[in-house]
Structures are given as structure tokens and as C-alpha cells.
Length: 500
Image 1 (cartoon, rainbow, N blue to C red):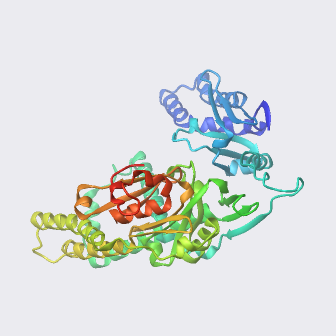
Image 2: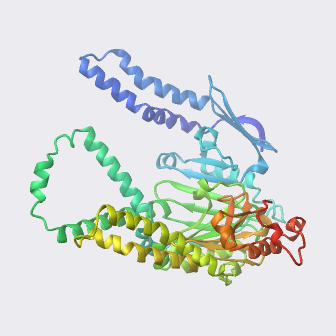
Image 3: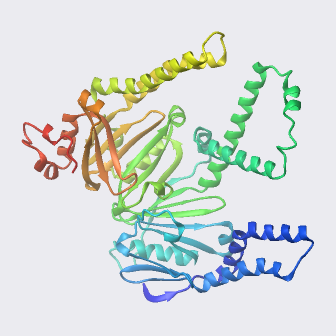
């Protein structure tokens, strides 16, 4: 720790000017096009290149940081001075990333996670331009990784929990990554084509004539296959680029150390989570991954918002056995993952069916009235299959509902298309909410919310009977809940609809 202000590494003088030049690139292109069209290339056009580079140099010389015994501070800007400061005890995570440019120069970017709700980059504590060695030393200082070591000269040992297996790429096409990348690629391609007037030169009549002889029975399946191949390829590429070299290790003694995560092919990223900040885990299995026997797991980190899911990732899409093993290692017990859950009863099951079938039936009825089913077609088959599909989803959602209190952890499971199982340590619960809609009250059900300061800020138990919800909250935190009960031994339902 030092009380003096420090600058970033001087090698950032090679990065900041280029970065600012790229930011001003649209303006530079506009100046060049305007000058060419007017037939003039005045000297002031060169200012469009010199000025951004000068701003980059100025950015380096006006950026300082310091880390004292109590705070982390970052100061930048000359005309508009911007200073960030946070206490050390608010540091939740430390992310170390290195793009290709940074790796070539031996530099990294350190992002200090403090749990801030702001998503503005200007409000993030980013130290952009530290050597890899200095970044790791800083990470150890901020999270006090060596504080638990008994001997002064002892070094914390790293225990490897998980390493990337190339065979896991088979799960990549079953995620939404490929769809997101395909959508982005289609958007960029359409924008480029539109910029160069490609759509203006497209003749709709000629296109219709050229495809008039195609058979729909052959064209549709071929198009679907090509689309699936393209999406799967993009998903695999994205999975490999993001997760190549994935390594999860634990440093220090059990429950008193930290978790280190490293991944990335082109841009490497290292994340450190203090054991004291990890209050639970979430295992998720979207429908495609679940059918293939896969899933993923992330940590519930105190003070880390849900928008920082990348910092809490503990394993990429991988086999279910791997996901459950990692989750058990983080929790210190596998009981919350293996224990049978208490079902929510027939009223919750009926509510799952009614919520799925009633809206679907309304849509189907409207479609039949507006379009009709006079001829058998793909459209009519889709309409006829909508209700059976909704019934299957409702059945799966009903089977997923469950909760338990196991080994000091509140466990909740729900979902079908994206099934989640949350295991939150009771020590991480800061309050209980019971919420009931009019329909839930008619059915004697409620939604129990265990409020926490990490992840999505809560763990939700859906459509649970009111008595069971109060029993669960009381069993988990009797000292807190008892004061809201008329009689903890005989009548706990008076607690219902109270927010703690």
C-alpha cells in the first residue's frame, strides 16, 4: 500500500492515442470524404489525426491512482476532473483482463468490483495499464489473499478445481450464444450492404422469378439446415474464444481464501472472488443443455449485481456432473444440490397449467377467428400444436417447483425453458418478503423471496403454500421471524404478507 499518487505504465502512451483515433474515426472519414468531394485537401484536415492522438497523450498524463490503507482512489481528466474513491472493505471482486494489444505490450486492465449500481464506464474503477505482475500483486493486496497464512514466509497454495475440456464444445450449439452472434452478424452485414447501396440494386421481381421454380418442401428444410449449421458454427467459435484455457483454482485455506478464474483465447480475463463474499451458487440448465445432460454454474457474490454475471461465472456450459462437482466445492457440501425438495402441492401445479394454457388458448382462438383453418398448412399445424406444447411446458414447470432448507442453505428450484436451482447460505439472507397476487391469494399460495445482497439480489420460491413459506422462513431465521408471529408454535400464518 502507498499513499502517493501513481501513474499508469508509460507503455499506455502507445495505446491511448490509437484508441482515441479509433473513437474519432467516423469524424475523420467524414472530413476526408468532404475534402475529397470539394477537391480540397487543406492542412487543417491533418488536425483530425493530430487532435485525437494529443487527447490520448493528455489522458495518460491526467490519470492517477493510489491505494491507501483504507481506500482505493482513481483520478482522471483535466478540464472535467473525475475522481472515484471507495473503501477497501467494499471491494467485492478483482478482474484482470488483457486484450491482444495489451498482451503484446505486457499490460493488463484491472477492474475493481465494488457493487456499484451504475453501468457507466466512467463510474467504474478501472486501472487500465498495469503490468501483469503488478496487477496480481494489487489483487492480492485488495483481497488480502495472504492474510490467513500462519507463517510470514508461507505462500498461499493454488488448488486446481476445474480445467477446460475441449470436448465441452459440444454444448455450445445448445446455448443462445450462436443466435446472438448470428443476429449481430446479420445486422452488420445488412448495414454494410445498405451503406454500399446493395438493397437499392436488388430487384424484387427478378428475385421472385428466380425462386418461382423452387419447391417449398425442399427449400424450407435446406434453409433450416443451413441456418442451424451457421448458428452452431458461430456458437462454437464464440464458446472457444470466450472459454479457452478456462481454469478455476482456489487459493489459501478452505473457506478463508479466494477463488481464481482465468479464461479467454484472444482477450484473457482473470477474476478473483473472496470466499467471504461468496454466499451461494446458482446452477442453471436451459432446455437444450438439460436435454443433453449439461448445465452451468455461477456464484452468488455479496455486493455484486446481476449485470456482472461474467465475474461470478464458475464453469462454462459443461456436463451436469462437472457443474454439480464445482458447485459442491464452492458450497463446501453437496447436500443442497442432491437433497430432495419439498413439492408445492396440487394448487401450485394447477396454477402452472392455468398460466400456460389460458393465454395460449386465447391466442389460438384469436388466430382461428382471424385466419381460419380451411386448408392444411404449416400455419394450421402450428396452431393445433400450440396447446399440447403449452401443456408440456406447464407439466415441466410444475415438476420443477420445489424448495428445501439443507445444511444451512435455502434451496429453491423453478423454471422449464431455463431451469434454475439456487442454493443460498442462510447467513447471506438479509430479509424475507412474502408477495401474493390476487390469483395466488385465491389459491392460498404466495411467493417467498429471500433477499440478499448478491447476484440477482434475491432467491425466489414460487407459488408455495403460505404455511410452508412461513415455516421455511422461521426455520431458517427464527430470531428474525418470531417477532412477527402471533404464536410461533401454533399459528405462523399471521406472518403472511409481511415484508421483513
